[in-house]
Length: 256
Ligand code: HEM
Image 1 (cartoon, rainbow, N blue to C red):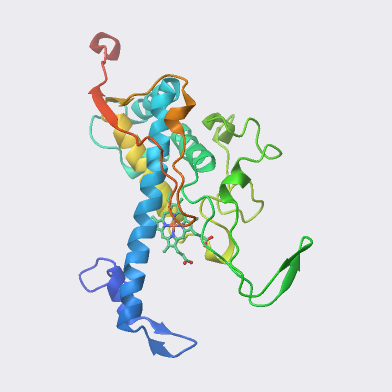
Image 2 (cartoon, rainbow, N blue to C red):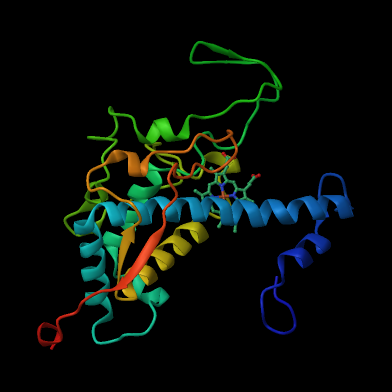
């Protein structure tokens, strides 16, 4: 939808204009009110959780952070301004880091509850109508039959010789991880979520900053342990990331 001013219509306007095809009616005020926070919360909470985990891993593994930095510096050349959308196309290793972050630390471990409209038998299990069904989304990405060393943070597993492997995060061909769910109710913001993460991580590393995690001890897995949360909440760090940004020392002679 395009408004007369040329900008896309705000989300609320699209809801006010919406005509439900089956019920042949518009949304009621209460429905509009409940859809707005769902959209805002779903879009922000999962994204910041994913960002926290990815940044934590960049701090914990400085060689991965250094490779991201090198890749960004190479793509931007002499420029010292912000990372632009076209720069992201030249950053396959960054994309691999984001995918590995979503595989190893999917913000929603169980996704949203799903159900079946009638009793069914699936894989030898009886699934009753109206039962709430959760998918063990994190466990799928940690399956050692699908991934080598699944609990290790290894972005290069998503790279082939030419750059990032064409990985289908929607699981339409095969499901090896499902950080955004799968099927008809897959997260509608998955493309935007990945784009946000690429921008945020690239900008943080590009600002010529070195990231430090407060209290981090090299190789201590406890630093990246998970906080236990309710099924529908994003999984965050038990010891929240407190990043310190310090100027990266650039050897000007080398830079010249
Ligand atoms: C890294 C970022 C994100 C992750 C990991 C994520 C993950 C998920 C997951 C697992 C679901 C449940 C899917 C299911 O039913 O099985 C979901 C639903 C949803 N997400 Fe995201 N999401 C992210 C970003 C976003 C963004 C940026 C938006 C919007 C701007 C968004 C909007 C939504 C909405 C509206 C739903 C509910 C869809 C429905 O009820 O059918 N998400 N997301």
